[in-house]
Image (cartoon, rainbow, N blue to C red; front, side, top):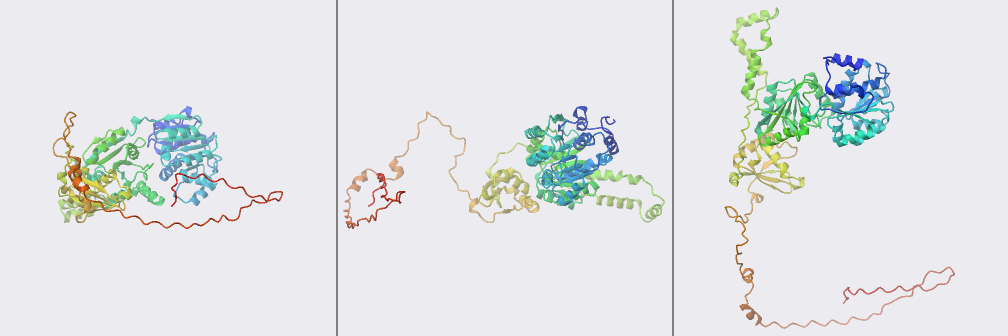
Length: 635
Protein backbone atom coordinates (compact mmCIF):
# COMPACT_ATOMS: atom_id res chain seq x y z
CA UNK A 1 0.00 0.00 0.00
CA UNK A 2 1.08 3.59 -0.65
CA UNK A 3 0.44 6.78 1.25
CA UNK A 4 -2.50 9.00 0.17
CA UNK A 5 -1.79 11.86 -2.21
CA UNK A 6 -3.51 14.34 0.11
CA UNK A 7 -0.47 14.34 2.42
CA UNK A 8 1.77 17.36 1.86
CA UNK A 9 5.24 16.60 0.49
CA UNK A 10 7.41 17.25 3.63
CA UNK A 11 5.15 15.05 5.76
CA UNK A 12 5.09 12.30 3.12
CA UNK A 13 8.90 12.23 2.95
CA UNK A 14 9.16 11.97 6.75
CA UNK A 15 6.64 9.11 6.88
CA UNK A 16 8.41 7.18 4.13
CA UNK A 17 11.75 7.62 5.88
CA UNK A 18 10.19 6.27 9.07
CA UNK A 19 8.89 3.18 7.26
CA UNK A 20 5.18 4.07 6.97
CA UNK A 21 3.46 2.38 4.04
CA UNK A 22 -0.12 2.99 5.20
CA UNK A 23 -2.05 5.14 7.66
CA UNK A 24 -4.15 4.17 10.66
CA UNK A 25 -7.90 5.02 10.61
CA UNK A 26 -7.49 8.15 12.71
CA UNK A 27 -4.56 9.39 10.60
CA UNK A 28 -6.52 8.92 7.37
CA UNK A 29 -9.63 10.61 8.83
CA UNK A 30 -7.95 13.89 9.84
CA UNK A 31 -6.54 14.64 6.34
CA UNK A 32 -9.84 14.29 4.48
CA UNK A 33 -10.81 17.36 2.40
CA UNK A 34 -13.72 18.29 4.69
CA UNK A 35 -11.33 18.73 7.65
CA UNK A 36 -9.29 21.50 6.01
CA UNK A 37 -9.10 24.49 8.35
CA UNK A 38 -11.84 23.29 10.72
CA UNK A 39 -11.82 22.58 14.44
CA UNK A 40 -11.80 18.84 15.15
CA UNK A 41 -13.18 16.73 18.00
CA UNK A 42 -11.57 13.33 17.52
CA UNK A 43 -12.16 10.19 19.60
CA UNK A 44 -9.68 7.35 19.09
CA UNK A 45 -8.35 4.61 21.30
CA UNK A 46 -4.92 4.64 22.93
CA UNK A 47 -2.17 3.53 20.57
CA UNK A 48 -3.98 4.44 17.35
CA UNK A 49 -1.34 6.92 16.15
CA UNK A 50 -2.94 10.15 17.40
CA UNK A 51 0.36 12.06 17.67
CA UNK A 52 1.17 11.62 13.98
CA UNK A 53 -2.49 12.30 13.19
CA UNK A 54 -2.68 15.78 14.72
CA UNK A 55 0.83 16.53 13.42
CA UNK A 56 -0.44 15.87 9.89
CA UNK A 57 -3.66 17.79 10.55
CA UNK A 58 -2.05 21.08 11.67
CA UNK A 59 0.82 21.05 9.15
CA UNK A 60 -1.11 22.89 6.38
CA UNK A 61 -2.26 25.49 8.94
CA UNK A 62 1.31 26.19 10.05
CA UNK A 63 2.87 26.18 6.55
CA UNK A 64 0.24 28.06 4.58
CA UNK A 65 1.41 28.17 0.96
CA UNK A 66 5.07 27.50 1.83
CA UNK A 67 6.93 24.21 2.22
CA UNK A 68 9.32 25.46 4.94
CA UNK A 69 8.39 27.18 8.17
CA UNK A 70 9.53 30.79 8.71
CA UNK A 71 12.26 31.76 11.15
CA UNK A 72 11.38 30.77 14.71
CA UNK A 73 9.72 33.44 16.81
CA UNK A 74 6.45 33.44 18.69
CA UNK A 75 4.99 29.89 18.69
CA UNK A 76 2.64 28.92 15.84
CA UNK A 77 1.24 25.79 17.52
CA UNK A 78 0.68 24.69 21.11
CA UNK A 79 0.25 21.04 22.13
CA UNK A 80 -1.03 20.26 25.64
CA UNK A 81 -0.53 16.79 27.18
CA UNK A 82 -1.53 15.45 30.62
CA UNK A 83 1.84 14.07 31.81
CA UNK A 84 5.52 14.90 31.48
CA UNK A 85 6.38 11.62 29.78
CA UNK A 86 3.64 12.00 27.19
CA UNK A 87 4.64 15.62 26.48
CA UNK A 88 8.28 14.63 25.87
CA UNK A 89 7.13 11.72 23.72
CA UNK A 90 4.94 14.02 21.60
CA UNK A 91 7.88 16.39 21.13
CA UNK A 92 10.09 13.55 19.85
CA UNK A 93 7.41 12.46 17.39
CA UNK A 94 6.95 15.99 16.04
CA UNK A 95 10.72 16.46 15.69
CA UNK A 96 11.06 13.72 13.06
CA UNK A 97 7.69 14.46 11.46
CA UNK A 98 8.56 18.15 10.88
CA UNK A 99 12.27 17.60 10.18
CA UNK A 100 12.03 18.62 6.48
CA UNK A 101 10.18 21.82 7.44
CA UNK A 102 13.07 22.96 9.68
CA UNK A 103 10.72 23.14 12.68
CA UNK A 104 12.00 24.25 16.06
CA UNK A 105 10.21 22.75 19.09
CA UNK A 106 10.30 23.73 22.77
CA UNK A 107 8.96 22.10 25.92
CA UNK A 108 7.23 23.41 29.02
CA UNK A 109 6.69 20.55 31.47
CA UNK A 110 6.61 20.34 35.24
CA UNK A 111 9.71 19.05 36.99
CA UNK A 112 12.15 20.66 34.54
CA UNK A 113 14.26 23.81 34.95
CA UNK A 114 12.04 26.84 34.28
CA UNK A 115 14.98 29.08 33.38
CA UNK A 116 16.11 26.71 30.62
CA UNK A 117 12.57 26.62 29.22
CA UNK A 118 12.23 30.42 29.32
CA UNK A 119 15.53 30.87 27.45
CA UNK A 120 14.32 28.41 24.78
CA UNK A 121 11.07 30.36 24.41
CA UNK A 122 12.99 33.65 24.14
CA UNK A 123 15.11 32.20 21.29
CA UNK A 124 11.90 31.33 19.46
CA UNK A 125 10.07 28.11 18.56
CA UNK A 126 7.48 27.00 16.04
CA UNK A 127 5.76 24.41 18.27
CA UNK A 128 5.57 24.33 22.08
CA UNK A 129 4.63 21.09 23.85
CA UNK A 130 3.89 21.05 27.57
CA UNK A 131 1.69 20.19 30.51
CA UNK A 132 -1.18 22.46 31.62
CA UNK A 133 0.29 23.71 34.89
CA UNK A 134 3.70 24.71 33.51
CA UNK A 135 2.22 26.30 30.36
CA UNK A 136 -0.12 28.42 32.48
CA UNK A 137 2.84 29.51 34.61
CA UNK A 138 4.80 30.60 31.51
CA UNK A 139 1.78 32.54 30.20
CA UNK A 140 1.27 34.28 33.56
CA UNK A 141 4.94 35.31 33.72
CA UNK A 142 4.93 36.56 30.13
CA UNK A 143 7.46 34.00 28.90
CA UNK A 144 5.04 32.35 26.43
CA UNK A 145 3.72 34.66 23.71
CA UNK A 146 0.30 33.43 22.51
CA UNK A 147 -0.36 36.18 19.97
CA UNK A 148 0.82 34.26 16.86
CA UNK A 149 -0.82 30.90 17.61
CA UNK A 150 -2.55 29.29 14.63
CA UNK A 151 -3.44 25.93 16.22
CA UNK A 152 -3.94 24.48 19.71
CA UNK A 153 -4.03 20.69 20.27
CA UNK A 154 -5.35 18.98 23.41
CA UNK A 155 -3.99 15.43 23.54
CA UNK A 156 -5.69 12.92 25.89
CA UNK A 157 -8.21 15.56 26.96
CA UNK A 158 -10.26 13.13 29.04
CA UNK A 159 -7.23 12.24 31.13
CA UNK A 160 -6.40 15.91 31.70
CA UNK A 161 -9.90 16.52 33.06
CA UNK A 162 -9.66 13.42 35.26
CA UNK A 163 -6.39 14.76 36.70
CA UNK A 164 -8.03 18.10 37.60
CA UNK A 165 -6.58 20.38 34.88
CA UNK A 166 -9.88 21.88 33.73
CA UNK A 167 -9.19 25.34 35.18
CA UNK A 168 -5.71 25.43 33.64
CA UNK A 169 -7.05 24.37 30.24
CA UNK A 170 -9.74 27.05 30.29
CA UNK A 171 -7.12 29.68 31.18
CA UNK A 172 -4.80 28.62 28.33
CA UNK A 173 -7.57 28.44 25.72
CA UNK A 174 -8.95 31.82 26.81
CA UNK A 175 -5.47 33.38 26.32
CA UNK A 176 -5.13 32.02 22.76
CA UNK A 177 -6.31 34.06 19.73
CA UNK A 178 -9.95 33.54 18.78
CA UNK A 179 -9.17 32.73 15.13
CA UNK A 180 -6.89 29.75 15.94
CA UNK A 181 -7.78 26.13 15.15
CA UNK A 182 -8.57 23.91 18.15
CA UNK A 183 -8.08 20.15 17.83
CA UNK A 184 -9.29 18.05 20.73
CA UNK A 185 -8.22 14.39 20.88
CA UNK A 186 -9.72 12.05 23.47
CA UNK A 187 -10.22 8.32 23.95
CA UNK A 188 -13.83 8.96 25.02
CA UNK A 189 -16.14 11.95 24.76
CA UNK A 190 -17.98 12.31 28.07
CA UNK A 191 -20.15 15.28 28.95
CA UNK A 192 -17.21 17.31 30.29
CA UNK A 193 -15.34 16.96 27.00
CA UNK A 194 -18.45 17.92 25.03
CA UNK A 195 -18.94 21.04 27.17
CA UNK A 196 -15.28 22.02 26.73
CA UNK A 197 -15.55 21.59 22.96
CA UNK A 198 -18.77 23.59 22.80
CA UNK A 199 -17.17 26.47 24.72
CA UNK A 200 -13.79 26.74 22.97
CA UNK A 201 -14.39 25.30 19.49
CA UNK A 202 -16.21 26.78 16.52
CA UNK A 203 -18.44 24.35 14.59
CA UNK A 204 -16.13 21.42 15.38
CA UNK A 205 -16.16 18.37 13.10
CA UNK A 206 -16.77 15.18 15.06
CA UNK A 207 -14.54 12.24 14.03
CA UNK A 208 -14.81 8.75 15.50
CA UNK A 209 -11.88 6.69 14.26
CA UNK A 210 -12.63 3.35 15.93
CA UNK A 211 -15.68 1.84 17.57
CA UNK A 212 -15.67 0.52 21.13
CA UNK A 213 -15.96 -3.06 19.90
CA UNK A 214 -12.71 -2.79 17.92
CA UNK A 215 -10.54 -1.55 20.74
CA UNK A 216 -7.35 -3.48 21.41
CA UNK A 217 -8.02 -5.89 18.56
CA UNK A 218 -4.26 -6.46 18.18
CA UNK A 219 -3.83 -7.59 21.81
CA UNK A 220 -4.04 -11.23 22.86
CA UNK A 221 -5.47 -11.42 26.40
CA UNK A 222 -4.70 -14.28 28.79
CA UNK A 223 -5.97 -14.87 32.33
CA UNK A 224 -3.83 -16.86 34.79
CA UNK A 225 -5.40 -17.87 38.12
CA UNK A 226 -2.84 -18.85 40.75
CA UNK A 227 -2.77 -19.20 44.54
CA UNK A 228 -2.25 -15.88 46.27
CA UNK A 229 1.19 -16.77 47.61
CA UNK A 230 2.50 -17.73 44.14
CA UNK A 231 1.61 -14.56 42.27
CA UNK A 232 5.22 -13.31 42.04
CA UNK A 233 6.44 -16.74 40.90
CA UNK A 234 3.86 -16.62 38.12
CA UNK A 235 5.20 -13.19 37.06
CA UNK A 236 8.76 -14.56 36.86
CA UNK A 237 7.76 -17.62 34.82
CA UNK A 238 5.63 -15.49 32.47
CA UNK A 239 8.63 -13.23 31.76
CA UNK A 240 10.82 -16.26 31.06
CA UNK A 241 8.23 -17.92 28.83
CA UNK A 242 7.48 -15.02 26.47
CA UNK A 243 11.02 -13.53 26.28
CA UNK A 244 9.69 -10.18 25.11
CA UNK A 245 12.01 -7.39 23.99
CA UNK A 246 10.33 -4.89 26.32
CA UNK A 247 7.77 -5.59 29.05
CA UNK A 248 5.76 -3.48 31.50
CA UNK A 249 4.65 -5.07 34.78
CA UNK A 250 1.91 -3.12 36.57
CA UNK A 251 1.48 -2.98 40.34
CA UNK A 252 -1.03 -0.97 42.36
CA UNK A 253 1.14 0.87 44.92
CA UNK A 254 4.63 2.33 45.21
CA UNK A 255 5.57 -0.20 47.88
CA UNK A 256 4.48 -3.06 45.62
CA UNK A 257 6.59 -1.62 42.79
CA UNK A 258 9.66 -1.50 45.05
CA UNK A 259 9.16 -5.04 46.31
CA UNK A 260 8.50 -6.61 42.92
CA UNK A 261 11.36 -4.80 41.17
CA UNK A 262 13.79 -5.90 43.91
CA UNK A 263 12.60 -9.50 43.54
CA UNK A 264 13.10 -9.43 39.76
CA UNK A 265 16.50 -7.74 40.06
CA UNK A 266 17.68 -10.44 42.45
CA UNK A 267 16.65 -13.07 39.90
CA UNK A 268 18.88 -11.54 37.23
CA UNK A 269 16.41 -9.41 35.25
CA UNK A 270 17.33 -5.96 33.94
CA UNK A 271 14.64 -3.88 35.66
CA UNK A 272 13.74 -0.18 35.98
CA UNK A 273 10.88 1.32 37.97
CA UNK A 274 8.36 4.11 37.41
CA UNK A 275 6.40 5.57 40.32
CA UNK A 276 5.20 8.95 41.49
CA UNK A 277 7.97 9.39 44.06
CA UNK A 278 10.73 9.49 41.41
CA UNK A 279 12.12 12.80 40.18
CA UNK A 280 11.78 13.83 36.55
CA UNK A 281 15.42 13.00 35.79
CA UNK A 282 15.03 9.52 37.30
CA UNK A 283 11.90 8.87 35.26
CA UNK A 284 13.59 10.08 32.09
CA UNK A 285 16.63 7.87 32.70
CA UNK A 286 14.42 4.84 33.32
CA UNK A 287 12.55 5.28 30.04
CA UNK A 288 15.77 5.95 28.15
CA UNK A 289 17.22 2.70 29.51
CA UNK A 290 14.22 0.86 28.07
CA UNK A 291 14.67 2.53 24.68
CA UNK A 292 18.44 1.86 24.59
CA UNK A 293 18.05 -1.80 25.48
CA UNK A 294 19.91 -1.51 28.80
CA UNK A 295 16.72 -2.68 30.55
CA UNK A 296 13.99 -5.00 29.32
CA UNK A 297 11.42 -4.80 32.13
CA UNK A 298 9.68 -1.77 33.64
CA UNK A 299 7.70 -2.15 36.88
CA UNK A 300 5.29 0.77 37.17
CA UNK A 301 2.14 2.12 38.79
CA UNK A 302 -0.91 3.19 36.80
CA UNK A 303 -0.40 6.96 37.01
CA UNK A 304 3.36 6.83 36.34
CA UNK A 305 2.89 4.84 33.11
CA UNK A 306 0.12 7.04 31.73
CA UNK A 307 0.72 7.82 28.06
CA UNK A 308 4.03 5.91 27.77
CA UNK A 309 4.91 4.53 24.32
CA UNK A 310 7.96 2.26 24.32
CA UNK A 311 9.37 0.67 21.15
CA UNK A 312 8.96 -3.10 20.73
CA UNK A 313 6.74 -3.38 23.81
CA UNK A 314 5.23 -6.81 23.21
CA UNK A 315 4.09 -7.86 26.69
CA UNK A 316 2.04 -6.28 29.49
CA UNK A 317 1.64 -8.14 32.79
CA UNK A 318 -0.96 -7.17 35.37
CA UNK A 319 0.81 -8.40 38.51
CA UNK A 320 -2.05 -6.91 40.55
CA UNK A 321 -5.62 -6.59 39.33
CA UNK A 322 -6.67 -3.13 38.15
CA UNK A 323 -9.40 -1.28 39.99
CA UNK A 324 -11.83 -1.17 37.06
CA UNK A 325 -12.22 -1.87 33.35
CA UNK A 326 -11.00 1.60 32.35
CA UNK A 327 -7.69 1.06 34.16
CA UNK A 328 -7.37 -2.37 32.53
CA UNK A 329 -7.76 -0.89 29.04
CA UNK A 330 -5.33 1.92 29.81
CA UNK A 331 -2.67 -0.49 31.09
CA UNK A 332 -3.10 -2.91 28.23
CA UNK A 333 -2.98 -0.10 25.66
CA UNK A 334 0.78 0.25 26.18
CA UNK A 335 1.18 -2.70 23.77
CA UNK A 336 -0.51 -3.47 20.45
CA UNK A 337 0.00 0.13 19.27
CA UNK A 338 -0.12 1.39 15.67
CA UNK A 339 -0.84 -2.01 14.19
CA UNK A 340 1.73 -4.00 16.19
CA UNK A 341 0.71 -7.20 17.95
CA UNK A 342 0.95 -7.56 21.70
CA UNK A 343 0.14 -9.88 24.58
CA UNK A 344 -1.55 -8.95 27.86
CA UNK A 345 -1.41 -11.38 30.81
CA UNK A 346 -3.74 -10.81 33.78
CA UNK A 347 -2.52 -12.68 36.88
CA UNK A 348 -5.30 -13.11 39.42
CA UNK A 349 -5.21 -14.74 42.89
CA UNK A 350 -7.64 -17.62 43.09
CA UNK A 351 -9.83 -15.87 45.68
CA UNK A 352 -10.29 -12.88 43.29
CA UNK A 353 -11.05 -14.84 40.16
CA UNK A 354 -14.63 -13.58 40.02
CA UNK A 355 -13.42 -9.98 40.29
CA UNK A 356 -11.01 -10.50 37.38
CA UNK A 357 -13.73 -12.04 35.22
CA UNK A 358 -16.09 -9.18 36.05
CA UNK A 359 -13.49 -6.55 35.03
CA UNK A 360 -12.78 -8.33 31.75
CA UNK A 361 -16.48 -8.69 31.03
CA UNK A 362 -17.09 -4.97 31.71
CA UNK A 363 -14.23 -4.08 29.35
CA UNK A 364 -15.81 -6.35 26.67
CA UNK A 365 -12.67 -8.47 26.45
CA UNK A 366 -12.55 -12.22 25.97
CA UNK A 367 -9.45 -13.59 27.69
CA UNK A 368 -8.11 -17.11 27.29
CA UNK A 369 -7.90 -19.04 30.55
CA UNK A 370 -4.41 -20.51 30.75
CA UNK A 371 -2.23 -22.10 33.41
CA UNK A 372 1.01 -20.36 34.40
CA UNK A 373 4.15 -21.75 32.71
CA UNK A 374 5.72 -24.43 34.87
CA UNK A 375 9.42 -24.89 35.55
CA UNK A 376 9.48 -28.00 33.36
CA UNK A 377 7.95 -26.09 30.43
CA UNK A 378 10.55 -23.33 30.68
CA UNK A 379 13.44 -25.80 30.99
CA UNK A 380 12.22 -27.56 27.85
CA UNK A 381 12.17 -24.24 26.01
CA UNK A 382 15.69 -23.48 27.25
CA UNK A 383 16.93 -26.79 25.88
CA UNK A 384 15.26 -26.20 22.53
CA UNK A 385 16.90 -22.78 22.20
CA UNK A 386 20.32 -24.17 23.09
CA UNK A 387 20.07 -27.03 20.59
CA UNK A 388 18.85 -24.79 17.77
CA UNK A 389 21.18 -21.85 18.41
CA UNK A 390 22.42 -20.24 15.21
CA UNK A 391 25.99 -20.03 16.52
CA UNK A 392 26.31 -23.83 16.38
CA UNK A 393 25.90 -23.81 12.59
CA UNK A 394 28.64 -21.26 11.90
CA UNK A 395 32.02 -22.91 11.16
CA UNK A 396 35.20 -21.71 12.83
CA UNK A 397 37.14 -19.02 10.98
CA UNK A 398 40.91 -18.91 10.40
CA UNK A 399 41.66 -17.15 13.70
CA UNK A 400 39.53 -19.57 15.74
CA UNK A 401 40.64 -22.81 14.02
CA UNK A 402 43.95 -23.33 15.96
CA UNK A 403 42.26 -22.90 19.35
CA UNK A 404 39.39 -25.18 18.32
CA UNK A 405 41.90 -27.89 17.35
CA UNK A 406 43.66 -27.57 20.71
CA UNK A 407 40.35 -27.88 22.57
CA UNK A 408 39.50 -31.05 20.68
CA UNK A 409 42.95 -32.50 21.42
CA UNK A 410 42.82 -31.82 25.16
CA UNK A 411 39.13 -32.45 25.82
CA UNK A 412 36.55 -34.77 24.43
CA UNK A 413 33.61 -33.50 22.44
CA UNK A 414 31.29 -34.58 25.26
CA UNK A 415 33.16 -32.47 27.83
CA UNK A 416 33.13 -29.43 25.54
CA UNK A 417 29.39 -29.84 24.91
CA UNK A 418 28.72 -30.17 28.66
CA UNK A 419 30.73 -27.00 29.37
CA UNK A 420 28.78 -25.14 26.67
CA UNK A 421 25.48 -26.35 28.15
CA UNK A 422 26.44 -25.24 31.66
CA UNK A 423 27.42 -21.77 30.42
CA UNK A 424 24.13 -21.37 28.58
CA UNK A 425 22.01 -22.51 31.51
CA UNK A 426 23.94 -20.31 33.97
CA UNK A 427 23.18 -17.24 31.84
CA UNK A 428 19.42 -17.85 32.08
CA UNK A 429 17.30 -17.21 35.21
CA UNK A 430 16.07 -20.30 37.01
CA UNK A 431 12.27 -20.70 36.72
CA UNK A 432 10.03 -20.95 39.76
CA UNK A 433 7.77 -23.80 40.79
CA UNK A 434 4.20 -22.64 40.22
CA UNK A 435 1.14 -24.70 41.04
CA UNK A 436 -2.02 -23.89 39.11
CA UNK A 437 -5.06 -22.95 41.16
CA UNK A 438 -7.46 -25.76 41.94
CA UNK A 439 -10.72 -25.82 39.97
CA UNK A 440 -13.68 -24.04 41.44
CA UNK A 441 -15.52 -26.05 44.08
CA UNK A 442 -18.79 -25.26 45.82
CA UNK A 443 -18.12 -23.12 48.85
CA UNK A 444 -18.54 -24.89 52.17
CA UNK A 445 -20.51 -23.00 54.82
CA UNK A 446 -18.37 -21.22 57.39
CA UNK A 447 -18.18 -22.98 60.72
CA UNK A 448 -16.75 -21.90 64.06
CA UNK A 449 -15.32 -25.40 64.52
CA UNK A 450 -12.63 -24.62 61.94
CA UNK A 451 -11.33 -21.73 64.06
CA UNK A 452 -11.06 -23.83 67.23
CA UNK A 453 -7.42 -23.64 68.28
CA UNK A 454 -6.73 -20.76 65.88
CA UNK A 455 -4.61 -17.73 66.68
CA UNK A 456 -5.32 -14.04 67.05
CA UNK A 457 -3.26 -11.40 65.28
CA UNK A 458 -3.29 -7.61 65.38
CA UNK A 459 -2.67 -4.85 62.85
CA UNK A 460 -1.82 -1.27 63.88
CA UNK A 461 -4.89 0.29 62.31
CA UNK A 462 -8.06 1.19 64.16
CA UNK A 463 -11.00 3.56 64.24
CA UNK A 464 -8.71 6.59 64.40
CA UNK A 465 -7.26 5.49 61.05
CA UNK A 466 -10.79 4.86 59.71
CA UNK A 467 -10.20 1.14 59.48
CA UNK A 468 -12.99 -0.82 57.81
CA UNK A 469 -13.30 -4.57 57.16
CA UNK A 470 -13.95 -4.02 53.45
CA UNK A 471 -10.35 -2.90 52.87
CA UNK A 472 -8.69 -4.50 55.88
CA UNK A 473 -9.70 -8.02 54.83
CA UNK A 474 -8.11 -7.88 51.31
CA UNK A 475 -4.89 -6.46 52.78
CA UNK A 476 -4.74 -9.20 55.44
CA UNK A 477 -5.42 -11.95 52.89
CA UNK A 478 -2.77 -10.59 50.52
CA UNK A 479 -0.16 -10.23 53.28
CA UNK A 480 -0.75 -13.69 54.70
CA UNK A 481 -1.41 -15.54 51.46
CA UNK A 482 -4.81 -16.77 52.67
CA UNK A 483 -8.40 -16.44 51.55
CA UNK A 484 -11.16 -14.60 53.35
CA UNK A 485 -12.59 -17.97 54.41
CA UNK A 486 -9.46 -18.47 56.54
CA UNK A 487 -10.12 -15.26 58.51
CA UNK A 488 -12.57 -15.46 61.39
CA UNK A 489 -13.73 -12.64 63.62
CA UNK A 490 -12.44 -9.11 63.04
CA UNK A 491 -12.70 -6.60 65.89
CA UNK A 492 -11.76 -2.97 65.40
CA UNK A 493 -10.61 -0.83 68.34
CA UNK A 494 -9.35 2.73 68.58
CA UNK A 495 -5.74 2.20 67.51
CA UNK A 496 -5.57 -1.44 66.43
CA UNK A 497 -7.59 -4.28 64.96
CA UNK A 498 -7.42 -7.91 66.01
CA UNK A 499 -8.48 -10.80 63.81
CA UNK A 500 -8.62 -14.57 63.98
CA UNK A 501 -6.81 -16.99 61.64
CA UNK A 502 -7.83 -20.62 61.19
CA UNK A 503 -5.63 -23.18 62.98
CA UNK A 504 -4.45 -24.90 59.79
CA UNK A 505 -3.32 -21.60 58.23
CA UNK A 506 -1.44 -20.03 61.15
CA UNK A 507 2.05 -21.30 60.19
CA UNK A 508 1.79 -20.31 56.52
CA UNK A 509 0.28 -16.96 57.54
CA UNK A 510 3.26 -16.20 59.80
CA UNK A 511 5.77 -17.18 57.10
CA UNK A 512 4.09 -15.04 54.45
CA UNK A 513 3.81 -11.96 56.69
CA UNK A 514 7.41 -12.33 57.84
CA UNK A 515 8.65 -12.63 54.27
CA UNK A 516 6.56 -10.08 52.39
CA UNK A 517 5.13 -7.79 55.07
CA UNK A 518 1.85 -6.01 54.47
CA UNK A 519 2.86 -4.15 51.33
CA UNK A 520 1.76 -0.86 52.92
CA UNK A 521 4.11 1.67 54.45
CA UNK A 522 3.86 1.92 58.23
CA UNK A 523 1.38 -0.96 58.55
CA UNK A 524 2.50 -3.99 60.56
CA UNK A 525 0.88 -7.30 61.51
CA UNK A 526 1.88 -9.23 64.62
CA UNK A 527 0.61 -11.94 66.91
CA UNK A 528 -1.48 -11.07 69.97
CA UNK A 529 0.78 -11.93 72.90
CA UNK A 530 -0.85 -13.76 75.80
CA UNK A 531 -4.53 -14.11 76.56
CA UNK A 532 -6.36 -10.95 75.61
CA UNK A 533 -9.56 -9.82 77.32
CA UNK A 534 -10.69 -8.36 74.03
CA UNK A 535 -10.49 -11.79 72.40
CA UNK A 536 -12.84 -13.30 74.97
CA UNK A 537 -16.32 -13.04 73.64
CA UNK A 538 -19.11 -12.90 76.26
CA UNK A 539 -21.52 -15.75 75.96
CA UNK A 540 -24.99 -14.34 75.45
CA UNK A 541 -28.29 -16.03 74.92
CA UNK A 542 -28.15 -18.44 72.04
CA UNK A 543 -30.98 -19.81 69.99
CA UNK A 544 -31.60 -23.51 70.59
CA UNK A 545 -30.39 -25.82 67.81
CA UNK A 546 -32.71 -26.73 65.01
CA UNK A 547 -34.96 -24.67 62.74
CA UNK A 548 -36.64 -21.65 64.35
CA UNK A 549 -40.23 -22.14 65.51
CA UNK A 550 -42.79 -20.49 63.26
CA UNK A 551 -45.21 -17.96 64.73
CA UNK A 552 -48.81 -19.23 65.06
CA UNK A 553 -51.38 -16.42 65.66
CA UNK A 554 -54.03 -18.92 66.85
CA UNK A 555 -51.80 -20.44 69.51
CA UNK A 556 -52.53 -19.00 73.01
CA UNK A 557 -49.75 -17.06 74.64
CA UNK A 558 -48.00 -18.60 77.65
CA UNK A 559 -49.22 -17.27 80.99
CA UNK A 560 -46.86 -14.79 82.61
CA UNK A 561 -45.89 -14.93 86.27
CA UNK A 562 -47.63 -12.63 88.76
CA UNK A 563 -46.17 -9.10 88.65
CA UNK A 564 -45.49 -9.01 92.38
CA UNK A 565 -43.75 -12.36 92.25
CA UNK A 566 -41.60 -11.27 89.33
CA UNK A 567 -40.47 -8.02 90.89
CA UNK A 568 -40.19 -9.26 94.47
CA UNK A 569 -42.50 -6.64 96.08
CA UNK A 570 -44.25 -7.33 99.42
CA UNK A 571 -47.45 -9.34 99.21
CA UNK A 572 -50.87 -8.02 100.26
CA UNK A 573 -50.99 -10.06 103.47
CA UNK A 574 -47.83 -8.33 104.70
CA UNK A 575 -49.32 -4.88 104.15
CA UNK A 576 -51.43 -4.86 107.32
CA UNK A 577 -48.46 -5.78 109.46
CA UNK A 578 -46.47 -3.04 107.77
CA UNK A 579 -49.21 -0.44 108.52
CA UNK A 580 -49.42 -1.37 112.22
CA UNK A 581 -45.89 -0.11 112.85
CA UNK A 582 -46.24 3.34 114.54
CA UNK A 583 -44.70 6.28 112.67
CA UNK A 584 -42.19 8.38 114.69
CA UNK A 585 -43.37 11.93 115.55
CA UNK A 586 -42.18 14.70 113.26
CA UNK A 587 -39.98 17.35 114.91
CA UNK A 588 -41.12 20.96 114.32
CA UNK A 589 -38.82 23.18 112.33
CA UNK A 590 -37.23 26.15 114.16
CA UNK A 591 -38.83 29.52 113.43
CA UNK A 592 -36.84 31.92 111.30
CA UNK A 593 -35.90 35.30 112.82
CA UNK A 594 -37.67 38.33 111.26
CA UNK A 595 -35.76 40.10 108.54
CA UNK A 596 -34.65 43.62 109.57
CA UNK A 597 -36.32 46.46 107.68
CA UNK A 598 -34.01 48.81 105.76
CA UNK A 599 -35.55 51.67 103.73
CA UNK A 600 -34.20 51.98 100.21
CA UNK A 601 -32.11 55.00 99.39
CA UNK A 602 -33.61 56.30 96.19
CA UNK A 603 -30.98 58.99 95.90
CA UNK A 604 -31.30 62.34 94.21
CA UNK A 605 -33.72 62.75 91.29
CA UNK A 606 -32.22 62.53 87.87
CA UNK A 607 -32.33 65.66 85.72
CA UNK A 608 -32.39 65.84 81.95
CA UNK A 609 -29.82 67.66 79.90
CA UNK A 610 -30.27 71.41 79.33
CA UNK A 611 -32.66 72.29 76.49
CA UNK A 612 -32.08 74.77 73.71
CA UNK A 613 -33.75 77.53 75.78
CA UNK A 614 -31.45 76.79 78.71
CA UNK A 615 -34.25 75.61 81.00
CA UNK A 616 -33.74 72.33 82.79
CA UNK A 617 -36.69 70.05 83.35
CA UNK A 618 -36.85 66.79 85.28
CA UNK A 619 -36.48 63.59 83.31
CA UNK A 620 -39.55 61.49 82.76
CA UNK A 621 -39.95 58.44 84.90
CA UNK A 622 -39.83 55.14 83.11
CA UNK A 623 -42.95 53.05 83.15
CA UNK A 624 -42.75 50.21 85.61
CA UNK A 625 -42.30 46.82 84.04
CA UNK A 626 -45.15 44.37 84.60
CA UNK A 627 -44.38 41.77 87.19
CA UNK A 628 -43.58 38.34 85.97
CA UNK A 629 -46.07 36.17 87.85
CA UNK A 630 -44.35 33.04 86.65
CA UNK A 631 -41.19 34.02 88.43
CA UNK A 632 -40.87 32.50 91.88
CA UNK A 633 -41.14 34.90 94.79
CA UNK A 634 -37.84 35.34 96.58
CA UNK A 635 -37.84 34.40 100.22
